[in-house]
Structures are given as structure tokens and as C-alpha cells.
Length: 286
Image (cartoon, rainbow, N blue to C red):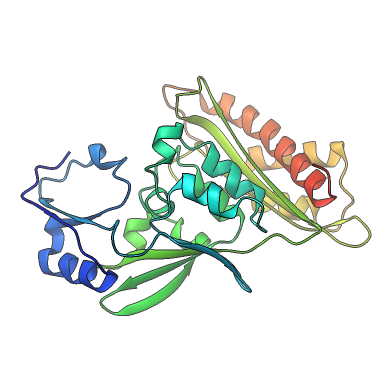
């Protein structure tokens, strides 16, 4: 944890950006603060608290759900449950840490300070979320696939802040699901999977996306699943095959929680299960 000489509380986004620019490498933005303990940088001596800059809203617009970066996971569930919010997003938010931590963890913080066990990045990648970044050079929008291709802090430019996440809403013939597997309720994930499916009028799969997390440092898209499923009517055998394809193609590492082989087997089962749940939801099943 850094040794601090200043704790700043801006009242607007513009003021926060100015403070970060003034203090340079010695300053870090503070969202929920749940990962601050992991910071080992001796250069950081200033925190800029973002809680008062007005980034905690959530609303539904024509182009999707607009989530403020400072919206907590508890707030996300409260504000968007019952709206056209993808189920995978609500499930990921509801499985991230304990209830106490969900009151602190923010949408933006969970998507910028990514660890292998992070929940929201897996769902965001699967759901084609877009991230609005604002800095000294203005604002720009980055797709989830680009943001999570490497550590997000390396994609973001100096002085930039994540201010908003835009998530497409689910149509009537679409469904999504998220699940993670842990050794205990309090442990980090060994494997996590988000799946999204859309069906055409004949009941065939017109879109299929799967993202996997916790099997390596960053979440990854399973393109092999889309190739295996699009244009076909879903069946148990088809979804099992898609899970096996995803597991074979995934980049997987081992750690003290699980071997790579165990994670591969687990991933195959979880992909098939989450695809099955997404298909049910796309067909109107509860």
C-alpha cells in the first residue's frame, strides 16, 4: 500500500483530471479502493478520490445501458434489475466478492484494475461493452476486445480516466449467463465463463459469444464457439462440443489453486452449461 502525502477530493471531473495532471506519476485515481492494498509503487504519494465527481449514474438509452464508472456493483443491481440489462452482467456483479465488497467495488475500478479473478471484465468482453475514456486530449471510446487485449492501464493514455461503460441491451430472442467456480465462497475464481446467445426466427443460433476468465491473467474471447454454433439449432451435444472446442483453444496457466489440465476440463463443462443457460433465456425460459 502506498505511503501518502496528499488525499484530494475533487468536486468535478474537470477538477479531477487537473489534479491528476498536476501530480503526474505520483498520483492515482481512487474508486472503490478495494485493490489499493496491492499497490507497491513507491512513486505514488497522492490519491484523487473520484466519489464526488458525478460518475455514479446508470440509465438506459437507445444504444444501450450507460453505466458511470463510479457506480458500485450493489448500485448496478439496484438500478438495472428489471431493465433490459443482460443477465450475465447482473450475475457477474452479484458474484464479485462479498456483499460488503460489492458496496465498495465500482464498475470502472473492476474493469481497469483487472486481476485474473475479476468478474466484470469477463461479462463485459462477452457482451461487447464499450468504454468511454476521458483525458487531457479529450474523450474516446474503446471496445472491450481492445481494452482487455492487454492490461487496461497500458491501453489508457497518461492522465485518462474511465468515465462510462456502455453495454448493449438484450433483445427478446437473446440470453446471457455468467458463472464462476471457486474452492470456497470466499476464494478467488479458478474458472469463470460468460455466454451470450441470440436466436433467429427458426430457433437457430444467429450469434454466440463466450468469454473465459481466471484461467490466465486476462479474460479471453472463445471465437471457436461462434464458429461451432452459428447457423445451427442448439442441442445438448452441440453445446458440449462447443465447450470442448473452447477448452482446447483456450490459453490456460496453472497456479496453486489448480493445474492447467483441471482448468481445461472445468472450462469445457462451464462453457457448455452457460451456453445452455443462455439458450434457455433466449427462448424465454426463466
